[in-house]
Length: 278
Image (cartoon, rainbow, N blue to C red):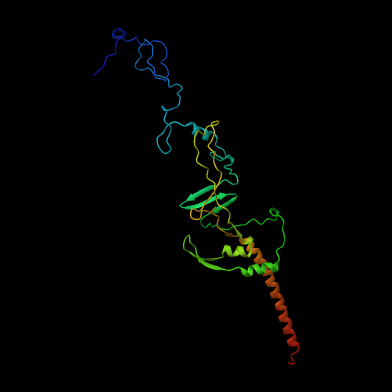
């Protein structure tokens, strides 16, 4: 049904105020009845105005509804850093680098395979392969350097036992060494057996804005075996360079003894030739 605009005189006869001819519509704000005696025009527009937060502005839901940014979210966004700062979001600096302090863990879980760093070590619960592994053997990085005694190295190498076994992780039959037995031969043959810690931050409660305080958190906590009640330890690993060093000593001794045996045989053969009447 078509409508016809009302004349100003008709509006007044109906008890409404005259159409506004001056002034600016009030900005959106707290609800109020108002006191103006003027009538608003159909195409009037209110400014948005500075609106406060609270229940009238729903916060955005992670993975869900869009909404407004919370004060806590704004705090974390304002403290992003590429340095090793606890309780902060991490970004990459101008060189695409990020720093993490020694003792802070970074864990990657990929299809149940875990890679993590803690205490200056990089660890993995699965096999790692690469074209080559190069251990750091630069003498400039070492101190208290002494030469290994060849005879003692031979004794150690002769005690090394080769083993064949089935890996529990994948059921593959393999051949190698046993770290526990190697540790009995020389503690320098093995690494690991360190106490395990969890580096996850404790859950935070309460406000997290500057000046409002943060709930206490724990940098690391012992990993306790639920069956034994004891702290778990990292698996033992083998230091191949330590074993290789002793094997080099053993080879040197073996070659020297082989040379001496060859010289003795040659001397014996020479004596037999000289004493042969033929």
